[in-house]
Image (cartoon, rainbow, N blue to C red; front, top):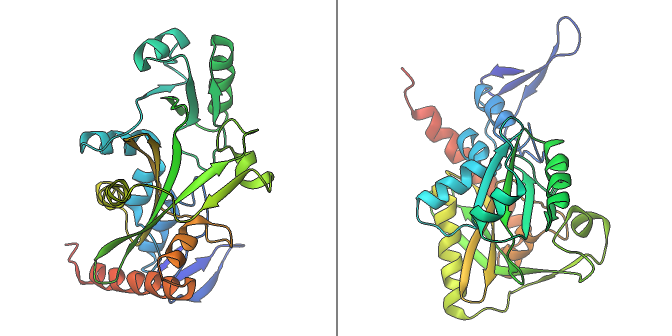
Length: 289
């Protein structure tokens, strides 16, 4: 529990114990209660510096419907989508009519790593896809499938000064046996996908994607870091989503893109921690009445 003044109290038993003073926290929790603003809110209440987006940016980016609506309203290109809930389910025919294609993706609104995501090309597949997605969330997204689209990613970093910069671009090329970049392709199949860094794109298109990545970062109130994912189909570009807690493994795109852009993982970590401290001091200087 938040203990205030940079302290957390570990509640185990009737009295609990003080976890001690914390210099800075680096959240590495994916999914609900980890990257949706919940942990970030607890850290703010405890007056602990932490890396990454705060409550607003974390919550907004985690909710695919909210983030897509904000991006769309800001004039950013997003894949056409619908939202449905368990109490107001949309029929396949209505989704096809609204999105203009019988080829659809169905996904939970508040989850990551492609968990619960599936593709539907018929009424039967759509019903099964919705049932799967509703196992993980009370709200799901139905999106138009983009056949042949390339998956391009860009890392965004906010400096302690508030300056925001975009890395070079990378491309995820999935193995042909995977219908899309699924959880299986990401984490189970060692040959499920290959990372191509830098992505082979025309210079002007690459620059536009970098500009869009920074725009997405700002529109969604991200802070510190985010990985912004795109679909590229010929000359058309669509923002897929922003991930406010991207992976930091040896095969993760976020640090690899920065390394390819001339920033080592050690220097990257230093910058993220410096941003966390600077933001914390700015927040402390505010008056809350």
